[in-house]
Image (tube, rainbow, N blue to C red; front, side):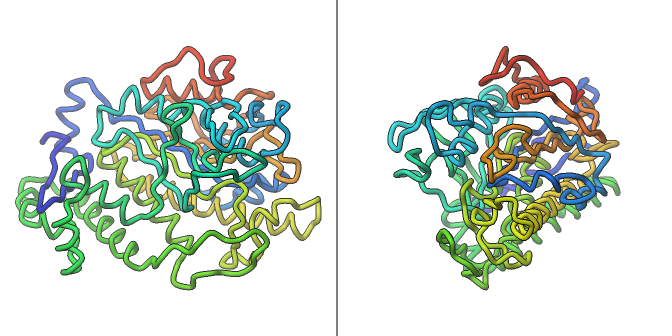
Length: 428
């Protein structure tokens, strides 16, 4: 069976995961499973003293053999460099570009991001060249941080130095893009019919799915059943998640929408990334969890105060403890993504084995607005090109060196990138 086999219904297309019957002809042609690459960005830095497997990273202990915990990487272009304040804007604008952004509210200029460099080279191999996600409502106009355009803080993916790739924040709309019947997305007729009848996208392709199952072996039947179950589960939880609340004002305390769950929102985005990689709908994704400088409260984690407010800890033990609690909550959600990706079998390995997932922030110590020694975790084996299960200590190396090495593995090589000085092959 061809690996691009798609079940089609009324304006709906359900791409299939990699099955054994697809893999045989692929491997006979001397090919391997595709490599995937994703970037997960968390805001406002971390409690650096607690950033270890004994403290903040405890939720990742079950996945220790799948991780490279990297220290000593930096983004020198995120510092002021004569531009004064605006570290939150520079942190996110520089994170995937390695370029110092122009300080202006109207004349936007940074660099092309690493994900888009890869998408430019290999994006034509998949239906979606890349996927950009966030849990924050974007604000593109005006000044948000000491004279920097708001676009810098609400985007980490950049198609060109002046054109951000605006992330999608609604899981429902992301789902519709993944299971679209054509390039423009799921048809209006299909959406309306599903909404009226509370139908699943799978209901539109049920007949084809049953016919397909009669031709599959036991292992492929099980994989297909697990995949369909995952789709129905995502649909159900999208309906449950309620309306996203408005932005939280600076200094505000409390949860503003009891029907909305930030955890469910974040995990849905991780589910959608997994589905998009599993079906080879795209091989490149970015996820801006929240924008840098954002003041989201975390009452569900025991911290009702705003994140940005807490991050300026002034070395106060109580604030540092609350910051570590928020950090650990974020890491717990990341562990959920790793578990999901490890549950998807691809040959003798897993989806995570064939992926490279970078988790981190553009600020290390938030009280100092430092962009040195950035908290960085690289998960996955890059289809055998990365050796995880280690702590890698770099000596003040540009983060962009790591990006050059990741681009090599994505078959999108570049001679240099941003402020890179070479490659970071310590991950090999």
